[in-house]
Length: 321
Length: 210
Image 1: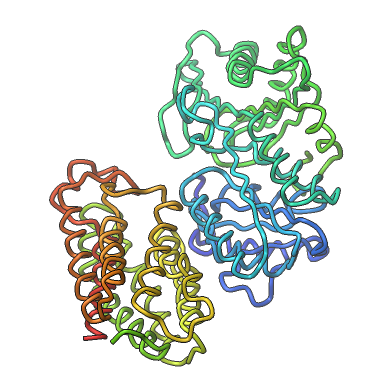
Image 2: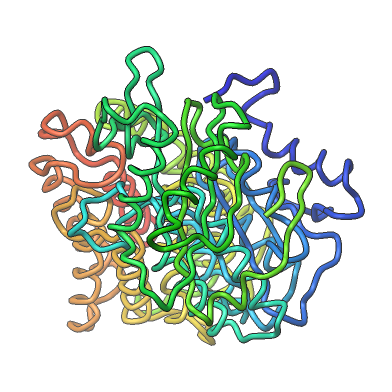
Protein backbone atom coordinates (compact mmCIF):
# COMPACT_ATOMS: atom_id res chain seq x y z
CA UNK A 1 0.00 0.00 0.00
CA UNK A 2 1.19 3.52 -0.75
CA UNK A 3 2.13 5.48 2.37
CA UNK A 4 -0.21 8.31 3.43
CA UNK A 5 0.56 11.79 4.68
CA UNK A 6 -3.03 12.01 5.90
CA UNK A 7 -4.19 9.98 8.91
CA UNK A 8 -5.16 6.53 7.53
CA UNK A 9 -7.59 6.09 10.45
CA UNK A 10 -9.74 8.98 9.31
CA UNK A 11 -8.82 9.45 5.66
CA UNK A 12 -11.88 7.73 4.13
CA UNK A 13 -14.20 9.85 6.26
CA UNK A 14 -12.27 13.00 5.35
CA UNK A 15 -12.28 12.03 1.69
CA UNK A 16 -16.08 11.75 1.60
CA UNK A 17 -16.45 15.14 3.25
CA UNK A 18 -13.89 16.83 1.01
CA UNK A 19 -15.23 15.30 -2.21
CA UNK A 20 -18.68 16.65 -1.33
CA UNK A 21 -17.22 20.11 -0.81
CA UNK A 22 -14.97 20.04 -3.90
CA UNK A 23 -17.78 18.81 -6.18
CA UNK A 24 -20.97 20.08 -4.52
CA UNK A 25 -22.84 19.88 -7.83
CA UNK A 26 -22.07 16.16 -8.10
CA UNK A 27 -21.86 14.75 -4.57
CA UNK A 28 -23.33 15.13 -1.10
CA UNK A 29 -22.88 13.50 2.30
CA UNK A 30 -25.87 13.08 4.63
CA UNK A 31 -25.71 15.90 7.19
CA UNK A 32 -26.62 13.51 10.02
CA UNK A 33 -24.34 10.66 8.94
CA UNK A 34 -23.25 8.45 11.83
CA UNK A 35 -19.80 7.50 10.54
CA UNK A 36 -19.41 10.10 7.76
CA UNK A 37 -18.42 7.58 5.11
CA UNK A 38 -21.52 7.70 2.92
CA UNK A 39 -21.18 9.63 -0.33
CA UNK A 40 -24.33 10.19 -2.40
CA UNK A 41 -25.07 11.69 -5.78
CA UNK A 42 -26.21 15.28 -5.50
CA UNK A 43 -29.50 14.40 -7.18
CA UNK A 44 -31.17 11.47 -5.49
CA UNK A 45 -33.47 9.25 -7.55
CA UNK A 46 -35.85 7.56 -5.11
CA UNK A 47 -38.34 6.68 -7.88
CA UNK A 48 -36.24 3.87 -9.34
CA UNK A 49 -33.86 1.11 -8.29
CA UNK A 50 -30.61 2.49 -6.88
CA UNK A 51 -27.09 1.09 -7.11
CA UNK A 52 -25.03 1.18 -3.92
CA UNK A 53 -21.35 0.29 -4.14
CA UNK A 54 -19.08 -0.42 -1.21
CA UNK A 55 -15.49 -1.49 -0.76
CA UNK A 56 -12.54 -1.31 1.58
CA UNK A 57 -10.99 2.13 1.87
CA UNK A 58 -7.75 3.21 0.25
CA UNK A 59 -8.39 1.71 -3.19
CA UNK A 60 -9.08 5.01 -4.94
CA UNK A 61 -10.73 5.71 -7.31
CA UNK A 62 -12.67 2.58 -6.27
CA UNK A 63 -15.42 3.20 -5.26
CA UNK A 64 -15.87 6.99 -4.83
CA UNK A 65 -14.78 7.55 -8.42
CA UNK A 66 -17.66 5.44 -9.69
CA UNK A 67 -20.42 7.73 -8.44
CA UNK A 68 -22.58 9.65 -10.87
CA UNK A 69 -25.09 9.49 -13.68
CA UNK A 70 -24.73 6.22 -15.55
CA UNK A 71 -22.88 4.68 -12.59
CA UNK A 72 -23.51 4.30 -8.84
CA UNK A 73 -26.01 6.28 -6.76
CA UNK A 74 -24.13 5.87 -3.48
CA UNK A 75 -20.65 4.78 -2.45
CA UNK A 76 -19.35 3.66 0.91
CA UNK A 77 -15.74 2.96 1.74
CA UNK A 78 -14.60 1.29 4.95
CA UNK A 79 -11.45 2.16 6.80
CA UNK A 80 -8.18 1.57 4.97
CA UNK A 81 -8.40 -1.95 3.50
CA UNK A 82 -11.30 -2.77 5.85
CA UNK A 83 -14.79 -3.76 4.80
CA UNK A 84 -17.43 -1.04 4.95
CA UNK A 85 -19.89 -1.09 7.83
CA UNK A 86 -23.37 -2.54 7.35
CA UNK A 87 -24.73 0.51 9.13
CA UNK A 88 -23.25 2.87 6.52
CA UNK A 89 -24.86 0.89 3.70
CA UNK A 90 -28.13 0.94 5.63
CA UNK A 91 -27.79 4.68 6.18
CA UNK A 92 -27.18 5.32 2.45
CA UNK A 93 -30.27 3.35 1.43
CA UNK A 94 -32.42 5.07 4.06
CA UNK A 95 -31.26 8.47 2.86
CA UNK A 96 -32.07 7.62 -0.77
CA UNK A 97 -35.42 6.19 0.30
CA UNK A 98 -36.10 4.15 -2.82
CA UNK A 99 -39.01 1.79 -2.30
CA UNK A 100 -38.12 0.18 -5.65
CA UNK A 101 -35.07 -1.14 -3.84
CA UNK A 102 -31.31 -1.16 -4.05
CA UNK A 103 -28.73 -3.38 -5.67
CA UNK A 104 -25.68 -3.72 -3.42
CA UNK A 105 -22.47 -4.29 -5.40
CA UNK A 106 -19.22 -5.26 -3.68
CA UNK A 107 -16.12 -7.37 -4.18
CA UNK A 108 -16.55 -10.88 -2.84
CA UNK A 109 -14.55 -10.88 0.39
CA UNK A 110 -15.80 -12.12 3.76
CA UNK A 111 -16.05 -8.75 5.51
CA UNK A 112 -17.74 -7.12 2.50
CA UNK A 113 -20.16 -10.02 2.17
CA UNK A 114 -21.06 -10.05 5.89
CA UNK A 115 -21.72 -6.33 6.04
CA UNK A 116 -23.71 -6.15 2.80
CA UNK A 117 -25.73 -9.21 3.77
CA UNK A 118 -26.53 -7.69 7.15
CA UNK A 119 -27.47 -4.39 5.48
CA UNK A 120 -30.09 -6.29 3.45
CA UNK A 121 -31.59 -7.63 6.67
CA UNK A 122 -31.55 -4.23 8.40
CA UNK A 123 -33.23 -2.61 5.41
CA UNK A 124 -35.86 -5.32 5.25
CA UNK A 125 -36.91 -4.17 8.74
CA UNK A 126 -37.58 -0.77 7.11
CA UNK A 127 -39.44 -2.40 4.18
CA UNK A 128 -36.70 -1.39 1.73
CA UNK A 129 -35.91 -4.33 -0.56
CA UNK A 130 -32.29 -5.00 -1.52
CA UNK A 131 -30.43 -7.62 -3.51
CA UNK A 132 -26.76 -8.53 -3.45
CA UNK A 133 -24.45 -8.62 -6.45
CA UNK A 134 -20.94 -9.69 -5.42
CA UNK A 135 -18.18 -9.31 -8.01
CA UNK A 136 -16.23 -12.56 -8.38
CA UNK A 137 -14.01 -11.71 -11.34
CA UNK A 138 -10.58 -12.69 -9.96
CA UNK A 139 -10.13 -15.74 -12.19
CA UNK A 140 -7.08 -17.22 -10.44
CA UNK A 141 -8.22 -16.62 -6.84
CA UNK A 142 -9.70 -20.13 -6.62
CA UNK A 143 -8.88 -23.39 -8.43
CA UNK A 144 -10.72 -23.90 -11.75
CA UNK A 145 -12.86 -26.75 -10.38
CA UNK A 146 -14.19 -24.59 -7.53
CA UNK A 147 -17.47 -22.67 -8.07
CA UNK A 148 -17.13 -19.08 -9.25
CA UNK A 149 -18.86 -17.92 -6.06
CA UNK A 150 -15.64 -18.78 -4.17
CA UNK A 151 -13.60 -16.26 -6.16
CA UNK A 152 -12.67 -12.82 -4.95
CA UNK A 153 -13.29 -9.65 -6.88
CA UNK A 154 -10.88 -7.15 -8.41
CA UNK A 155 -11.94 -4.42 -10.83
CA UNK A 156 -14.69 -6.11 -12.85
CA UNK A 157 -17.23 -4.45 -10.58
CA UNK A 158 -16.87 -1.41 -12.82
CA UNK A 159 -18.75 -3.30 -15.56
CA UNK A 160 -21.33 -4.47 -13.02
CA UNK A 161 -21.95 -0.92 -11.82
CA UNK A 162 -22.36 0.34 -15.37
CA UNK A 163 -24.77 -2.43 -16.32
CA UNK A 164 -26.75 -2.20 -13.08
CA UNK A 165 -27.01 1.58 -13.37
CA UNK A 166 -28.18 1.32 -16.95
CA UNK A 167 -30.82 -1.25 -15.94
CA UNK A 168 -31.95 0.95 -13.04
CA UNK A 169 -32.07 4.12 -15.13
CA UNK A 170 -34.09 2.24 -17.76
CA UNK A 171 -36.72 1.60 -15.10
CA UNK A 172 -36.17 -2.15 -14.70
CA UNK A 173 -37.30 -3.80 -11.48
CA UNK A 174 -34.87 -4.75 -8.72
CA UNK A 175 -35.21 -8.44 -9.63
CA UNK A 176 -34.38 -7.76 -13.28
CA UNK A 177 -31.52 -5.40 -12.41
CA UNK A 178 -30.07 -8.05 -10.08
CA UNK A 179 -30.53 -10.86 -12.59
CA UNK A 180 -28.82 -9.02 -15.45
CA UNK A 181 -25.98 -7.76 -13.25
CA UNK A 182 -25.33 -11.25 -11.84
CA UNK A 183 -25.39 -12.64 -15.37
CA UNK A 184 -22.68 -10.12 -16.32
CA UNK A 185 -20.66 -11.24 -13.31
CA UNK A 186 -20.85 -14.86 -14.51
CA UNK A 187 -19.43 -13.80 -17.89
CA UNK A 188 -16.56 -11.69 -16.61
CA UNK A 189 -12.99 -12.48 -15.59
CA UNK A 190 -10.01 -10.45 -14.46
CA UNK A 191 -6.39 -11.52 -14.53
CA UNK A 192 -3.77 -9.88 -12.31
CA UNK A 193 -0.46 -9.63 -14.18
CA UNK A 194 2.54 -8.42 -12.19
CA UNK A 195 6.06 -7.92 -13.48
CA UNK A 196 9.50 -8.46 -12.00
CA UNK A 197 11.67 -6.12 -14.11
CA UNK A 198 14.98 -7.21 -12.56
CA UNK A 199 14.52 -10.88 -13.42
CA UNK A 200 12.28 -10.28 -16.45
CA UNK A 201 9.49 -12.45 -15.05
CA UNK A 202 5.73 -12.25 -15.56
CA UNK A 203 3.58 -13.40 -12.63
CA UNK A 204 -0.08 -14.32 -12.98
CA UNK A 205 -2.66 -14.35 -10.20
CA UNK A 206 -0.77 -12.66 -7.36
CA UNK A 207 -3.08 -11.29 -4.65
CA UNK A 208 -3.20 -7.66 -3.53
CA UNK A 209 -2.47 -8.63 0.07
CA UNK A 210 0.82 -10.30 -0.89
CA UNK A 211 -0.56 -13.73 -1.82
CA UNK A 212 1.96 -15.51 -4.07
CA UNK A 213 1.29 -15.77 -7.83
CA UNK A 214 -0.35 -18.85 -9.30
CA UNK A 215 2.20 -19.10 -12.09
CA UNK A 216 5.43 -17.41 -13.20
CA UNK A 217 6.67 -17.12 -16.79
CA UNK A 218 10.24 -16.36 -17.80
CA UNK A 219 9.71 -16.31 -21.58
CA UNK A 220 6.90 -13.75 -21.90
CA UNK A 221 8.52 -10.51 -20.74
CA UNK A 222 7.24 -8.34 -23.58
CA UNK A 223 4.00 -6.65 -24.62
CA UNK A 224 3.41 -9.48 -27.11
CA UNK A 225 4.08 -12.07 -24.41
CA UNK A 226 1.74 -10.50 -21.83
CA UNK A 227 -0.98 -9.97 -24.47
CA UNK A 228 -0.92 -13.60 -25.67
CA UNK A 229 -0.66 -15.03 -22.18
CA UNK A 230 -3.49 -12.99 -20.71
CA UNK A 231 -5.74 -13.48 -23.74
CA UNK A 232 -5.26 -17.27 -23.50
CA UNK A 233 -5.91 -17.43 -19.73
CA UNK A 234 -9.04 -15.26 -19.89
CA UNK A 235 -10.50 -17.04 -22.94
CA UNK A 236 -9.83 -20.42 -21.33
CA UNK A 237 -11.72 -19.26 -18.27
CA UNK A 238 -14.66 -17.64 -20.07
CA UNK A 239 -14.96 -19.84 -23.17
CA UNK A 240 -16.59 -17.09 -25.26
CA UNK A 241 -19.30 -18.10 -27.70
CA UNK A 242 -19.82 -16.72 -31.19
CA UNK A 243 -23.01 -15.02 -29.99
CA UNK A 244 -21.11 -12.87 -27.49
CA UNK A 245 -19.16 -9.63 -27.94
CA UNK A 246 -15.91 -9.16 -26.06
CA UNK A 247 -15.37 -6.09 -23.89
CA UNK A 248 -11.95 -5.45 -22.37
CA UNK A 249 -10.60 -3.23 -19.62
CA UNK A 250 -6.90 -2.81 -18.93
CA UNK A 251 -6.19 -1.17 -15.59
CA UNK A 252 -2.61 -0.31 -14.81
CA UNK A 253 -1.21 -0.84 -11.32
CA UNK A 254 0.26 2.07 -9.37
CA UNK A 255 3.91 1.55 -10.41
CA UNK A 256 3.26 1.10 -14.13
CA UNK A 257 3.55 3.86 -16.73
CA UNK A 258 0.15 5.13 -17.87
CA UNK A 259 1.04 4.72 -21.54
CA UNK A 260 1.80 1.02 -21.04
CA UNK A 261 -1.88 0.34 -20.21
CA UNK A 262 -2.96 1.75 -23.59
CA UNK A 263 -0.16 0.02 -25.48
CA UNK A 264 -0.93 -3.34 -23.86
CA UNK A 265 -4.62 -2.91 -24.71
CA UNK A 266 -3.59 -2.45 -28.36
CA UNK A 267 -1.48 -5.60 -28.29
CA UNK A 268 -4.31 -7.66 -26.77
CA UNK A 269 -6.73 -6.31 -29.36
CA UNK A 270 -4.29 -7.41 -32.07
CA UNK A 271 -3.87 -10.86 -30.49
CA UNK A 272 -7.66 -11.20 -30.37
CA UNK A 273 -8.37 -10.05 -33.93
CA UNK A 274 -8.12 -13.48 -35.53
CA UNK A 275 -10.06 -15.25 -32.75
CA UNK A 276 -12.74 -13.50 -30.68
CA UNK A 277 -12.35 -9.83 -31.65
CA UNK A 278 -12.67 -7.19 -28.95
CA UNK A 279 -15.61 -4.85 -29.44
CA UNK A 280 -14.80 -2.11 -26.95
CA UNK A 281 -11.70 -1.26 -24.95
CA UNK A 282 -11.21 0.73 -21.79
CA UNK A 283 -7.70 1.41 -20.56
CA UNK A 284 -6.43 3.58 -17.74
CA UNK A 285 -6.19 3.67 -13.99
CA UNK A 286 -9.24 2.36 -12.13
CA UNK A 287 -7.93 1.24 -8.74
CA UNK A 288 -4.78 1.31 -6.65
CA UNK A 289 -5.58 -2.09 -5.12
CA UNK A 290 -2.13 -3.26 -6.21
CA UNK A 291 0.90 -1.16 -5.31
CA UNK A 292 2.96 -2.98 -7.92
CA UNK A 293 4.16 -3.03 -11.50
CA UNK A 294 1.54 -4.66 -13.66
CA UNK A 295 -2.00 -4.69 -14.97
CA UNK A 296 -5.46 -5.95 -14.21
CA UNK A 297 -6.97 -7.24 -17.44
CA UNK A 298 -10.72 -7.82 -17.50
CA UNK A 299 -12.78 -9.49 -20.21
CA UNK A 300 -16.55 -9.37 -20.32
CA UNK A 301 -18.46 -11.60 -22.75
CA UNK A 302 -21.70 -9.77 -23.47
CA UNK A 303 -24.67 -11.33 -25.21
CA UNK A 304 -27.33 -9.23 -26.87
CA UNK A 305 -29.12 -8.57 -23.58
CA UNK A 306 -25.99 -7.40 -21.76
CA UNK A 307 -24.85 -5.29 -24.70
CA UNK A 308 -27.86 -3.03 -24.56
CA UNK A 309 -26.80 -1.96 -21.06
CA UNK A 310 -23.17 -1.27 -21.98
CA UNK A 311 -23.75 1.76 -24.18
CA UNK A 312 -22.91 5.26 -23.07
CA UNK A 313 -19.85 6.69 -21.41
CA UNK A 314 -19.07 7.79 -17.89
CA UNK A 315 -16.54 10.53 -17.16
CA UNK A 316 -15.07 10.96 -13.69
CA UNK A 317 -12.30 13.33 -12.66
CA UNK A 318 -9.73 10.56 -13.16
CA UNK A 319 -10.95 8.31 -15.96
CA UNK A 320 -13.61 7.63 -18.57
CA UNK A 321 -15.51 4.38 -18.90
CA UNK B 1 -41.23 -16.79 36.24
CA UNK B 2 -42.80 -17.64 32.89
CA UNK B 3 -42.90 -14.23 31.18
CA UNK B 4 -40.48 -11.29 31.01
CA UNK B 5 -41.60 -7.68 30.60
CA UNK B 6 -39.80 -5.09 28.50
CA UNK B 7 -38.48 -3.52 31.70
CA UNK B 8 -37.07 -6.85 32.96
CA UNK B 9 -35.50 -7.52 29.57
CA UNK B 10 -33.93 -4.05 29.60
CA UNK B 11 -32.35 -4.79 33.00
CA UNK B 12 -31.09 -8.07 31.57
CA UNK B 13 -29.41 -6.32 28.64
CA UNK B 14 -27.89 -3.75 30.96
CA UNK B 15 -26.38 -6.59 33.00
CA UNK B 16 -25.04 -8.16 29.80
CA UNK B 17 -23.43 -4.86 28.84
CA UNK B 18 -21.81 -4.40 32.24
CA UNK B 19 -20.46 -7.95 32.22
CA UNK B 20 -18.95 -7.56 28.75
CA UNK B 21 -17.41 -4.20 29.66
CA UNK B 22 -15.67 -5.52 32.80
CA UNK B 23 -14.54 -8.63 30.90
CA UNK B 24 -12.58 -6.66 28.29
CA UNK B 25 -9.15 -7.61 29.75
CA UNK B 26 -10.07 -11.32 29.69
CA UNK B 27 -11.41 -11.16 26.12
CA UNK B 28 -8.39 -9.18 24.94
CA UNK B 29 -5.99 -11.64 26.54
CA UNK B 30 -7.72 -14.63 24.93
CA UNK B 31 -7.94 -12.97 21.54
CA UNK B 32 -4.29 -11.95 21.63
CA UNK B 33 -3.26 -15.60 21.86
CA UNK B 34 -5.12 -16.82 18.76
CA UNK B 35 -6.49 -13.71 17.05
CA UNK B 36 -5.66 -10.10 16.42
CA UNK B 37 -6.45 -8.96 19.95
CA UNK B 38 -9.25 -6.57 19.08
CA UNK B 39 -12.28 -8.59 20.20
CA UNK B 40 -12.34 -7.27 23.78
CA UNK B 41 -11.98 -3.66 22.67
CA UNK B 42 -14.68 -4.02 20.02
CA UNK B 43 -17.10 -5.69 22.42
CA UNK B 44 -16.47 -3.12 25.13
CA UNK B 45 -17.00 -0.28 22.65
CA UNK B 46 -20.25 -1.78 21.40
CA UNK B 47 -21.73 -2.69 24.77
CA UNK B 48 -20.64 0.62 26.35
CA UNK B 49 -22.81 2.37 23.77
CA UNK B 50 -25.66 -0.07 24.46
CA UNK B 51 -25.30 0.49 28.24
CA UNK B 52 -25.41 4.26 27.80
CA UNK B 53 -28.55 3.95 25.72
CA UNK B 54 -30.26 1.54 28.12
CA UNK B 55 -29.57 3.86 31.05
CA UNK B 56 -31.35 6.76 29.37
CA UNK B 57 -34.16 5.32 27.28
CA UNK B 58 -37.36 3.40 27.86
CA UNK B 59 -38.90 1.08 25.28
CA UNK B 60 -42.47 0.32 24.30
CA UNK B 61 -41.85 -3.35 23.52
CA UNK B 62 -39.22 -6.10 23.59
CA UNK B 63 -38.96 -5.71 19.79
CA UNK B 64 -37.97 -2.03 20.08
CA UNK B 65 -35.52 -2.80 22.89
CA UNK B 66 -33.64 -5.56 21.09
CA UNK B 67 -33.75 -3.81 17.70
CA UNK B 68 -32.30 -0.60 19.13
CA UNK B 69 -29.58 -2.48 21.03
CA UNK B 70 -28.65 -4.57 17.98
CA UNK B 71 -28.51 -1.53 15.72
CA UNK B 72 -26.22 0.20 18.17
CA UNK B 73 -23.82 -2.74 18.19
CA UNK B 74 -23.75 -2.77 14.39
CA UNK B 75 -23.33 1.00 14.13
CA UNK B 76 -20.61 1.32 16.75
CA UNK B 77 -18.61 -1.91 16.44
CA UNK B 78 -18.26 -2.45 12.68
CA UNK B 79 -16.08 -5.27 11.36
CA UNK B 80 -16.91 -8.95 11.66
CA UNK B 81 -17.75 -8.93 15.40
CA UNK B 82 -20.21 -6.08 14.88
CA UNK B 83 -21.98 -8.04 12.17
CA UNK B 84 -22.05 -11.32 14.09
CA UNK B 85 -23.16 -9.98 17.49
CA UNK B 86 -25.50 -7.51 15.81
CA UNK B 87 -27.05 -10.45 13.96
CA UNK B 88 -27.54 -12.25 17.28
CA UNK B 89 -29.72 -9.32 18.41
CA UNK B 90 -31.45 -8.53 15.10
CA UNK B 91 -31.73 -11.93 13.39
CA UNK B 92 -34.60 -13.25 15.53
CA UNK B 93 -36.70 -10.10 15.89
CA UNK B 94 -39.64 -11.63 14.03
CA UNK B 95 -40.20 -13.89 17.09
CA UNK B 96 -40.95 -10.77 19.16
CA UNK B 97 -43.10 -8.83 16.75
CA UNK B 98 -46.30 -7.51 18.35
CA UNK B 99 -45.55 -9.02 21.77
CA UNK B 100 -45.67 -7.05 25.03
CA UNK B 101 -43.99 -9.75 27.14
CA UNK B 102 -41.91 -12.77 26.19
CA UNK B 103 -42.46 -16.39 27.22
CA UNK B 104 -39.62 -18.91 27.43
CA UNK B 105 -40.80 -20.20 24.05
CA UNK B 106 -40.70 -16.68 22.53
CA UNK B 107 -37.19 -16.10 23.85
CA UNK B 108 -35.99 -19.54 22.74
CA UNK B 109 -37.41 -18.87 19.26
CA UNK B 110 -35.73 -15.45 19.18
CA UNK B 111 -32.31 -16.89 20.07
CA UNK B 112 -32.81 -19.83 17.72
CA UNK B 113 -33.62 -17.58 14.75
CA UNK B 114 -30.62 -15.38 15.54
CA UNK B 115 -28.42 -18.48 15.77
CA UNK B 116 -29.64 -19.73 12.39
CA UNK B 117 -29.05 -16.31 10.91
CA UNK B 118 -25.46 -16.31 12.18
CA UNK B 119 -24.82 -19.80 10.77
CA UNK B 120 -26.15 -18.75 7.36
CA UNK B 121 -24.48 -15.36 7.22
CA UNK B 122 -21.15 -16.50 8.66
CA UNK B 123 -21.25 -19.76 6.67
CA UNK B 124 -20.29 -21.52 9.86
CA UNK B 125 -21.24 -24.80 11.52
CA UNK B 126 -20.54 -26.72 14.72
CA UNK B 127 -16.85 -27.50 15.11
CA UNK B 128 -15.46 -24.44 13.30
CA UNK B 129 -14.23 -23.03 16.63
CA UNK B 130 -16.36 -19.91 16.59
CA UNK B 131 -18.90 -18.19 18.84
CA UNK B 132 -21.48 -20.41 17.13
CA UNK B 133 -20.19 -23.45 19.06
CA UNK B 134 -21.33 -21.88 22.34
CA UNK B 135 -24.44 -20.26 20.89
CA UNK B 136 -25.90 -23.39 19.34
CA UNK B 137 -25.57 -25.23 22.68
CA UNK B 138 -27.36 -22.43 24.54
CA UNK B 139 -30.01 -22.11 21.85
CA UNK B 140 -30.80 -25.83 21.80
CA UNK B 141 -30.94 -25.86 25.59
CA UNK B 142 -33.46 -22.96 25.57
CA UNK B 143 -35.63 -24.74 23.00
CA UNK B 144 -35.59 -27.91 25.13
CA UNK B 145 -36.56 -25.88 28.22
CA UNK B 146 -39.42 -24.29 26.30
CA UNK B 147 -40.69 -27.71 25.23
CA UNK B 148 -40.55 -28.90 28.86
CA UNK B 149 -42.44 -25.78 30.02
CA UNK B 150 -39.59 -24.81 32.34
CA UNK B 151 -39.38 -21.42 34.05
CA UNK B 152 -36.99 -18.65 32.94
CA UNK B 153 -34.86 -19.34 36.03
CA UNK B 154 -34.29 -22.98 35.04
CA UNK B 155 -34.07 -22.22 31.31
CA UNK B 156 -31.35 -19.58 31.77
CA UNK B 157 -29.42 -21.71 34.27
CA UNK B 158 -29.31 -24.60 31.77
CA UNK B 159 -28.55 -22.31 28.81
CA UNK B 160 -25.69 -20.75 30.76
CA UNK B 161 -24.24 -24.21 31.52
CA UNK B 162 -24.74 -25.25 27.89
CA UNK B 163 -22.86 -22.17 26.62
CA UNK B 164 -19.97 -22.93 28.99
CA UNK B 165 -19.94 -26.52 27.72
CA UNK B 166 -19.72 -25.09 24.18
CA UNK B 167 -16.78 -22.91 25.20
CA UNK B 168 -14.97 -25.93 26.68
CA UNK B 169 -15.53 -27.84 23.44
CA UNK B 170 -13.84 -25.13 21.38
CA UNK B 171 -10.58 -25.77 23.25
CA UNK B 172 -10.06 -29.04 21.39
CA UNK B 173 -11.02 -27.60 17.99
CA UNK B 174 -8.83 -26.18 15.22
CA UNK B 175 -9.89 -22.76 13.96
CA UNK B 176 -11.48 -22.80 10.52
CA UNK B 177 -12.82 -19.24 10.35
CA UNK B 178 -11.57 -15.70 10.72
CA UNK B 179 -8.06 -14.58 11.47
CA UNK B 180 -7.52 -17.23 14.13
CA UNK B 181 -7.46 -19.94 11.43
CA UNK B 182 -4.02 -18.58 10.49
CA UNK B 183 -2.76 -19.77 13.88
CA UNK B 184 -3.73 -23.38 13.07
CA UNK B 185 -2.33 -25.82 15.71
CA UNK B 186 -1.63 -22.97 18.14
CA UNK B 187 -5.39 -22.58 18.64
CA UNK B 188 -5.57 -26.04 20.25
CA UNK B 189 -6.09 -25.82 24.02
CA UNK B 190 -7.46 -22.27 23.83
CA UNK B 191 -11.16 -21.40 23.83
CA UNK B 192 -12.64 -19.31 21.03
CA UNK B 193 -12.95 -15.73 22.26
CA UNK B 194 -16.32 -15.13 20.61
CA UNK B 195 -17.64 -18.27 22.30
CA UNK B 196 -16.48 -16.87 25.66
CA UNK B 197 -18.42 -13.67 24.93
CA UNK B 198 -21.55 -15.72 24.21
CA UNK B 199 -21.07 -17.55 27.51
CA UNK B 200 -20.78 -14.21 29.35
CA UNK B 201 -24.04 -13.02 27.77
CA UNK B 202 -25.94 -16.09 28.99
CA UNK B 203 -24.27 -15.84 32.39
CA UNK B 204 -25.64 -12.29 32.66
CA UNK B 205 -29.13 -13.44 31.62
CA UNK B 206 -29.04 -16.04 34.38
CA UNK B 207 -27.68 -13.65 37.04
CA UNK B 208 -30.34 -11.03 36.28
CA UNK B 209 -33.25 -13.43 36.60
CA UNK B 210 -32.07 -15.55 39.55
